[in-house]
Amino acid sequence: MSKVEIFEPAMCCSTGVCGPGVDPELLRIATFISELEGMGKKIVRYNLSSAPEAFVQNIKVNDALINVGMGALPITVVDDEIKKMGDYPANSDLATWAGMTREDIIEMIKKSQSSSGCEGCGGGNCC
Image (cartoon, rainbow, N blue to C red; front, side, top):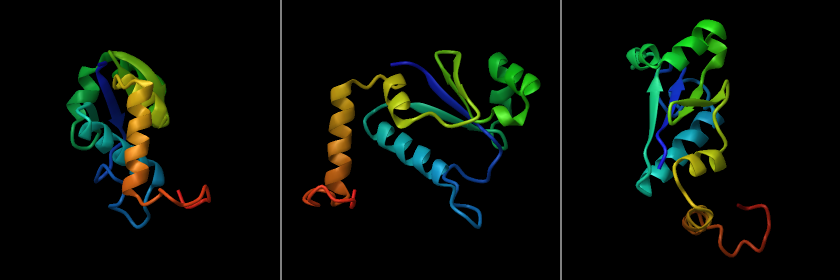
């Protein structure tokens, strides 16, 4: 499994539920990372306000912030290489970088659908 790290802008919480409006992108990433962790995968998230030393210690992230500015965040680093800047990665990318196989991903989707009550919806838009 690759080492996956996400360097995020300063915020009060990792879910985006801490302000007046919920950021759906933060909710998506927090939920998906939680699902991956439930499967034994590890993705490390660094928040600029709570772990600024991680931003300084990672030379590539530090350089990106100096050269691009805060707009570079979030930055996703996989095995010490920047893979994505300015946006969170897609779930499929995270799953791949976390070492999941296609079969693992399909199984995770099936479990997610069965636990959310999506089975038997007849192919409608309920899922």
